Length: 209
Image 1 (cartoon, rainbow, N blue to C red):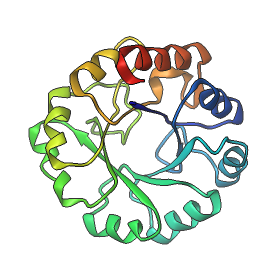
Image 2: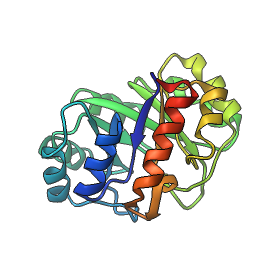
Image 3: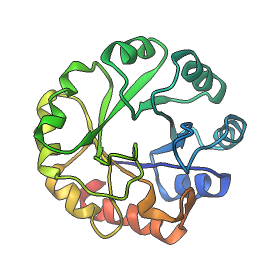
């Protein structure tokens, strides 16, 4: 079954809706660089209300190690997701605390060469944008995602996915999971119920069940 991650959750209504519709992972952005940033206390309140079937992911961008671990513990997150220039050693130290997803911004074939240096649970492949660390709404070359499978870790596809193109991504890559944020939003951090529902339906009908 292809897993579904809805990222950029900022409020309880969107979180419960996504969980009810069948999302497997919910992402909470703790980076000040993002318009989808959520405060720690808000995240704690949301996560307490979620069903245990949903895994929670904290997204960080080049943040201090102790602060990241503190947020992980306070929010009782299931996964760290690092979207910046975090080193393999940084991820290795964090992995002692919990499961790690490392994101890579894919621009060209050379972009996937560093994957094998990271001993993490999963790789998340996102579109490259010079000014943004995720949430770009841009698609990258999915052929590179297919090639990234050779490194032996589960692959999460992100970057510009929406209800109109996610089925093609699944057919092309057959990833472990798909990740969507801006593709199911009314505005940054505000989800659209119909778009989430359609996105999940498209994943399941494309063979993601």
